[in-house]
Image (cartoon, rainbow, N blue to C red):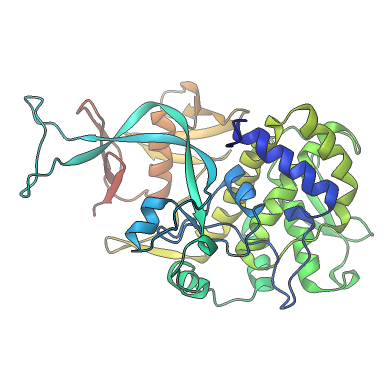
Length: 404
């Protein structure tokens, strides 16, 4: 019989069980080939990682292969999933909906073969919905994992240690060395680490450093999380849970891995928090994904370049942060503060007008585009055919076109 509990409750129950048995993703040891035990689950048809709670949930399933796909996606690869194979449920926010394309008279538009054309329409309010996916080990004929990784994963010229060092450097975080403890101090806003020589290996040093960098993102000028809890308090344990999940994700991205030893003391607090409020795991996973995006974006913006219609541009940022000044719509907006619930305060430097917006607002999305592509003209077409003149991209539905 299918489990009818909400997914966040199922994930919390399974994580509690694994934490008690010492088999959670946090507690898995490194493999014999010295590679990190945790790999971020990915979709072999899109090359994209699963995110947030879905990533944690899929990694908790009894499979070694990190690849997951829907039945429809398997069919696109000409792969057949055996009948009665059990799928795993995930959840996601649906921002767009596929609908038949209509002409001015409201009639369906068909292509030369008589099939109705489809278009994606952005929904006014996102819808939380479920999907069912299968692991690659359940799909006969799947190509080797190595082929998928070679196709979708960039080949960095650096080692995991070099990659971790690049992330720390790109963050521009204040890091001090000395003593025997590793921690982040929110009020003075610095990371304290023991000397590198005090760690058994370089990878362990960088794994600990990246964990503390996860805490560093919580400062009010960055992702603005609650950082006031004392050691041993529920607030402190919740922040550690966020940093721990982010450590898994960043450790997998870099190949540096993550070390659970110094965080094992929080297991009982995590179990207590999840039993009292299973939805806390959803919040923690969402925050951990934001941490990962924030940290990796900074490194990518410095270390990688991508070609966009012949225009070389840095990889896209996914957040607006305090201090950003963005030229847009014949003025310049400055981000003056980062608030809770994914909100920010901005100021129009031309008129002095001050606004509070969230990351789901059109202005936020427009400013983010203008931040990523400051040198090209943008024209965004909305569903009601009105146009907004920006600086550099043409957006049609979910498609972004860069024009010189």
